Length: 255
Length: 263
Image (cartoon, rainbow over all chains, first blue to last red; front, side, top):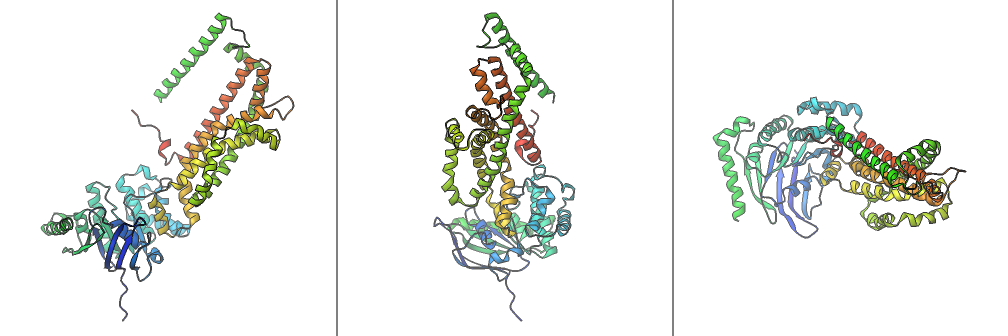
């Protein structure tokens, strides 16, 4: 039997800005299919750059990245990128924002309508399909952004601090929903965050980066049951895991 | 709503007081009408020469309107080219500024010399004066798109054309309207400037600029006032027309058109 192609693989990846500054150095990492992995680290450690490299949105300086065995640029139809702000087009209604990806990929109107309605129902926004983004709250905007990312049926979600701007309650609820959807659909998710609790709650592994230049400090396996719920947050085990990862993160600063 | 009404009333009151003062001054100081006609005399002249006044107004409206429309089409087209290449932009942008800084009043006679006098020349003067604000504002809007939005489009394998027409152009709409608002005001100035030099293309009838020249030569000061009022009305009408079109296109999504919050 052929060995399974890793979903995302970094081999000795370095990234240098045009100014010459080294952002990432010697990143080697394999993300398995269906895995939820978080990237954690202090600001300026190249978390977002790492994500942009996977998406092929910025060229790498050394090493190799493959997505499902392909160069990132050729694997874009497998991926969706979710940004920190909702990045909605303010001149489009919610439904036309959700349909944007499909429209750019020349999906027919019938497919688009059907898919958009399905996605709006999935994120619980069917009631505001005709609204404009400015009429929505921050949490709702982020839901639209997620619905848009999901509409093109990606297998891999690249999420760059997507809930950082939300209030804590909304953020917790979005985390629970995201996890439930991920389990249902088996997506591979690479999730950048600066919140330890969020990383622990969501992922099976947490990659802790050290800055200047950005490099992998440690990869922590999270020891929690796969299916987490709101109750998980108040459990002793969760608290222990959070403090364990926090210690690793503190270690980054003391090196 | 009530607040707007009261503000409107106040503005009207100021107008009535000023005009009244003007009338009283002219009466009491016995100012000769060719120096400063009284408001009532101006009103009388507007009534008596209404047909001629409207005729002039329409000629100028046509030149300014067509010039403005042409500048929108050409300006947006040029901005679209500028948005495609920073290299091209850097090379050609200085000439846009040149277009804006060159005094139109000095160039108008040249244009007339080249293309001959008449409505077409006047339209061309209006067009030239309107072009720079449209190019500058639209280009600004086209190139100031958030990096993340471009990345989003790239992730969906969007073509250059898709990024231009589905992202950059709608994003630039508010900027385009800022440009149109500026140009709408100066299109009237451009047309009148053109007419000052172009004279009349129709026998016995010219635009506001031509008529202003004629009225001042004849010391028809009351009619001169009527013409100035007509030119002002034209500028205002253009401005509000643009405001309305802007509101129509942008009110759903853009902040600038959102009604101010109640204080």
